[in-house]
Image 1 (tube, rainbow, N blue to C red):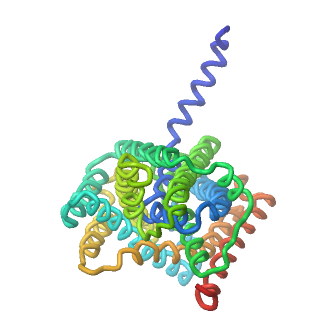
Image 2 (image 1 turned 90 degrees about the vertical axis):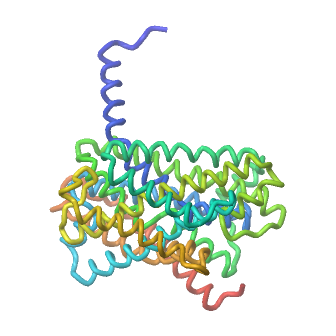
Length: 418
């Protein structure tokens, strides 16, 4: 077979290298959605409802790709993070609510990451304080002492370790026909538990912190509007990868725990319950996947909190600017170590800490997306890259879906039957 002409090969090589130079924020942001709270939520979804919520995961994969692309485009075109744009273009009351609410939810999510670390420690008999301290110091050193490139390499390596869940999901030999049917045809159970879990599923996959992070991370990396086409590939790959992993987690627990009638509250319980059903190898894959997810989430969400606050106050906040970004690293350090101290308080309800932020996130998201849509339709900010009519229609349908799910969850929690 003849090789392609040199000019065509050089063109392909140039485009491929450009893609590699842009890749990172979308994949990291998407993968970090599968944190301790995410893995627990997906495990509970599969164990409690089998394959019945796969249709929701299918829809929110499309919404995740859409919203992450919008965040990336905002950052690439304006060169600013989302919190900075909100501060500059909205009233003080709106800005304060979004920033404070997002920061509080982030703290809850960081606690959830530590909860994941603790549950893995329980599986292997490691004292809680040892596991939490090691996790906190490791993540702090990686970000505080590393450069942007080295931090991203760690994040991307962590992203590929999620293959453990694909292996686990395949090991249990799920019913692929039933799974595909439930993915394409909605199946709703009218109960509090179903809608509560559905809200958690949405809230752990499409996150407020994810919108702040992907935009700030692209800006921090120095990617500009001329690389918009390549950044979209990064974003779409990240959205697909995160929910592809989530799909296999649900398959693993639906094909084993749901069929066996085993109810769980945490991903660690899922790992332990898998051993007699799918073997010790599945248990360890699940547990190590949870630890990896918890550490990645701990780093990314803590960085997001630092981005949010520094941008909201107009301070410098970049990973490579060590001395020039003191506030960024103070906030990052506070999030890491304050949360580590809180999670070690005896008797803390870890399950509520894990699921609560996901639910609250579902209620914040519609407000945040409305703000993002207003920014994306601002000709002064976006110029030729502002939203078109079709994209606006799809975006508003997505917002309506999120509002409807939040409303249905509230209604079922107040008036529905258990």
